[in-house]
Amino acid sequence: MDSPTELIHRSLDAFRIEIPSWGFADTGTRFGKFHQPAAAIDLDDKLADASHVHRLTGCCPTIAVHVLWDFTPGTDPGEVVRKAQALGIAIGSINPTLFQDQIYKWGSIASPDPAAREQAAAHLVDSVLLGQATGSRAVSLWIADGTNYPGQDSIRARKKRLEEVLEATHSHLAPGQVLLIEYKPFEPAFYQTDMADWGMAFLTAKKTGPQAKVLVDTGHHYLSQNIEQIVAWLLDEGMLGGFHFNDRRYADDDLTLGSIDPYQIFRIFHEIHLYAWENGGVYPEIEYMIDQSHNLKPKIEAMIQTVCTAQELYAKAALVDLPALARAQAECNVVDAEMILKKAFNTDVSAALESWRAARGLAPDPLQAHRASGYAGKAAAERTRRRQELGIVTLQSYA
Image 1 (cartoon, rainbow, N blue to C red):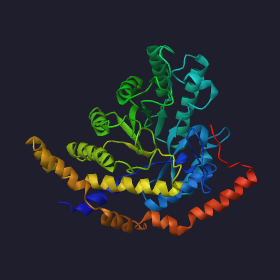
Image 2: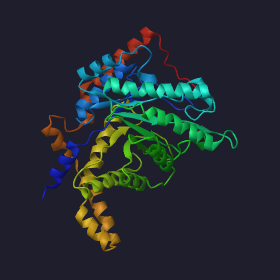
Image 3: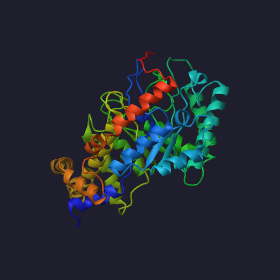
Image 4: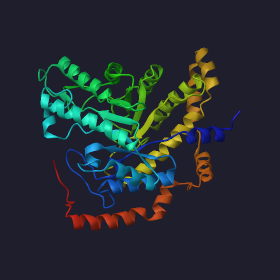
């Protein structure tokens, strides 16, 4: 039988988590934006920051990109791939941008405006082709469509428009590519959102085609919703395609992972380990991705903090005594079943994490290694100079 340390090392060897390009750039809320001197200005900066995080943590080999934020007209995908490879990383999920153009006022692929749907559909195909050009496996789609007032549009007509465009998009996927459909209960629309929950995403993915799966964003749920139950159902149906990890006090707060409820993330990871145990040790193919915008914490520090928390909770979940849990469940022994989970969650895995890092030539504490590297100070000085040269205004702005 493997020791706890061996279990943790083996689980971490297979655990990869993707970091988002937008997590390194200046972001804000509907009310304003607070700038950070070390924030990334362009895609080159984002690639450099992502590479730095990967060097320190050893588990973030890919960077998610937002098409219109990172691939402006004229950007050469091949050149971006070469730059990423030179930094020891690769381009990860491709995220279409279907919410910022003026034509999307009434929606994108569900819009009643044929011109808006046509533009959105073309952008989705372009995103699929961009994924093929960059060697990316996943196209990660969040659909911001919805309505704010009863009677504004036909809910069923919007559903049919959305399905039509997604089916057409699916036809352009190459073998091995996957279309991840993300859901969100509200915002920016508040009466009804066209892709509001996991059931809608599940049904839509099934209609879209065999390469469509559901993406679970841990912030895209109502308060107290049992996310691990959603994960368990999607696993059982073979429809869990990926995660966007963050934490929230209310809804899509984009807080660092585990800052509010680390036990919930542990329970999600437990469902995945349990599924693999029940299926001969074979883990499902899941895209683990971070989706956070760090408005208050230093961006690279927040990213490292999230990655290390994900590793810690994934390792803890690997320690659940699954045979003992199965026996307790079969006997309806509620107390012992719960305590088996709690025992794993309360286990201090820091020594095992440090030994895993040491065996791979990594610093025992990635956050402290980042602070000692001077990377943030150098980036802040260089990027402040470039902003001045480019005439980029960094005064606080309000929407």
